[in-house]
Image (tube, rainbow, N blue to C red; front, side, top):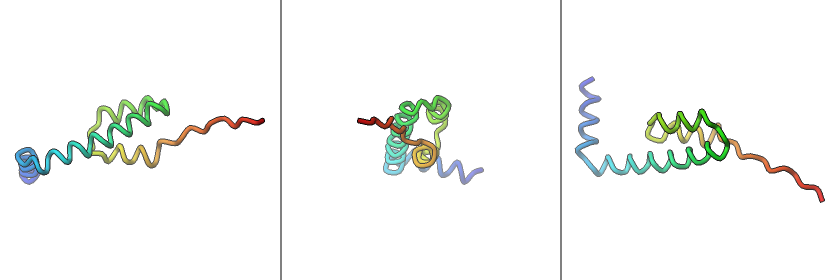
Length: 76
């Protein structure tokens, strides 16, 4: 328990570690939220918005669960 506190204290007091993690997380969260909204995955959107996993859940959603919508085939 105490080692976890030391890790968090180090991250919060050292901006060279803290800011890149924030940027990394925001980029992945933005991409995942955009894909979830476009694919109309309401529950994924809510989960991605609420849960903060430093980009891990977002990456899993993007590469495993967000499928591209197929456009209807036009004959002619």
